[in-house]
Image (tube, helix red, strand yellow):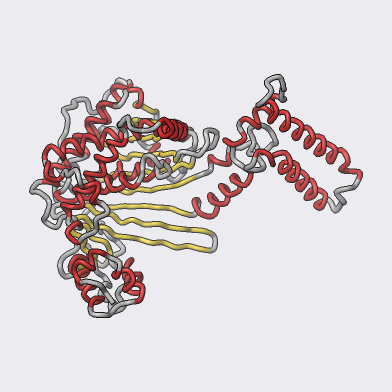
Length: 549
């Protein structure tokens, strides 16, 4: 279960990969996550005998890590996760001097010389004003001359560069040749400014955390997700308790966070009925084959084991804990102490392209196992029925059929059918080349910390979101998850009353029943204006109640 969450989290942290997280794959990921809730996290493990080894080799690191991760599947633990986002790479290492590696002044290459000159002249005016002098004063004659000569040199070089594309005998100074050849792949000064503003006003004040317990044998998992924003004159925090009943395939969300929105937009009679209540969302409505959830979990672990075994040994190595502070880009300062206290650290590094291949292999294995076990869930027409929104298409079985069809469609799209035209083939090749360049400029790093007894105490995921150009620095996402023993003294949801720590019939709202009641309320002519508009176009509502006036 934990690993499933890690997969989904890792995929989300690479949201900029259009080829990786298109709509189909998001639904496919939802299939895995939702079905894992149906019966709980039973585990299947491989027979690896060496938990920790004194031989600090890549092969030993891979074996030790495989053993630790498989062992964790059967353990109960308390966890705390912290997520930090930083784009400091995009501006901290930039040389702001006007040279071939500095950010360009304009996004348009034919305006580079003029924009660069204007920015330099504006800086000279600012300097003159600070000294209470006129820009035309003799004190600035030499600097104005340099700016003029640089501008003329730049424009001459640009004209020569344009003509050199048609006349190979025309030469361009090496500096300008490099500058103009790589202009479109470089950030602009405006890009750097925006990156600094985003970092200062959004990313640095923002902190995202989650904590809870995982008890696979008891069929229970909890999460208290929270987001904090702390600036000099503004502090805010939002929490969302989540309770997973793994045995019954039910997820509970705390209703308070949705009550005001629902009351204002849909249910004008709600009042305070949702106060101190849980919202019950049943994942399985009884239409799925018996044992489906268990089989999906087994397929999930089998796919994880197979893809892990196939991973190159070169991706793994041991890292001295005292070297973590020197990693570049730097790890978040508040995450480091727990990591530095480790006795042993194993690292795995994957390129984004390698991670994409892992995802494809993982989904293929899950699909093949599930389609062989439950052929009735695999329908050739399912892909065409995704847009069919009749009421009987909203059962758990129908949704699973659609998601399996999406996975199959995604798998088939990677196989060349041979029916494309030359133009389509060339366009596809060009798109894949650009996509490959993006992927090659990003990587995923996973660190795993162990105590003296070989117990996994934390894991850290660092993902780089692929940048648009090869020369651009990437935005970095750091997720640290720490593990500890479950304490009976600590409340799972410290922000909730003691009598609602565990959802039950008396303190929860069944969303299936509530949804039916709310649609009938609108069928009787009640409700808000926006609600009437929404329900009037919902095919499921039409199927049950006809057109809502």
